[in-house]
Image 1 (tube, helix red, strand yellow):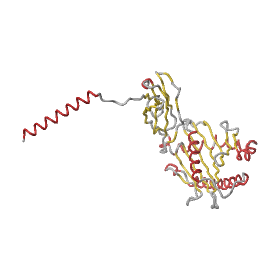
Image 2: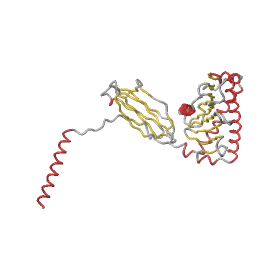
Image 3: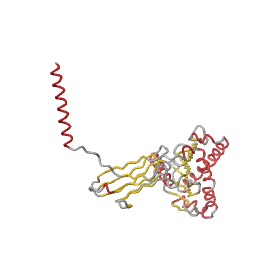
Image 4: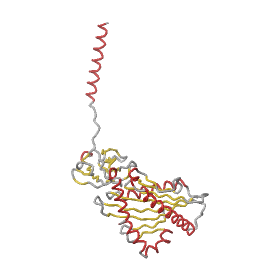
Length: 331
């Protein structure tokens, strides 16, 4: 039997990976659909959540008491009841299709039905600041390792395992490919722009990053400088290191921009430098929330000279002694 805890971790990792892929554009929309078959429970669970940037704006859970698509942020409550009725009907229809697909895959793969089985579908699009289409994504994953993914050209597919084996022929005929390309370039972009309009006070703001540089000595004796940018929005940001004023990419680590979990983003750029040469390196930060490019360098901690400490102790002793003598004289 598969471990349900492992499944939960896997889902979190999949979400984190997929979210980070869309930090390159100015704004993005992403929908996650997960179907879960659990042992001893007759009805599968169907979950559908949608995000703009890193903010979940609506969600549906078949086991929720409301049994309907619900707003997850205040600005989505501006949508009329007709919108929520349509989204709920679509989620209910998709839940039936998703459950049937999962049962089909379990049967075709000769898996035990008294086990945990998962099917995840993800799709979304991202746009530039002027609203123009930058890219889209669609994919289906079974158990986290069998999948079929629409490539960046929105015209071809990458597949692995039973999902690709069973569903690729339909997509090669072109109708499904065209359907998803039309959706991603059209309806998905329209929904994203609608969300940006409804939530403009939140989604179109510019939060400047909080920045600093940290210093750590490696076991080999070299030094790692890390340039941090925290709490910024939107996700577009550039971090670069320079050595003596020239771009430096050697021994540099630049992880993907990550959601911070509070509606903002975070990023770091790390570089390994020889000891005693830290002051030759500068970190350069570009973000629309800043009035201009920001230049940072590591600032060594200020140390107080020993002679100053000795003088301070002597002066302190003199003051204490004077006070004591004065008190004795008064008495």
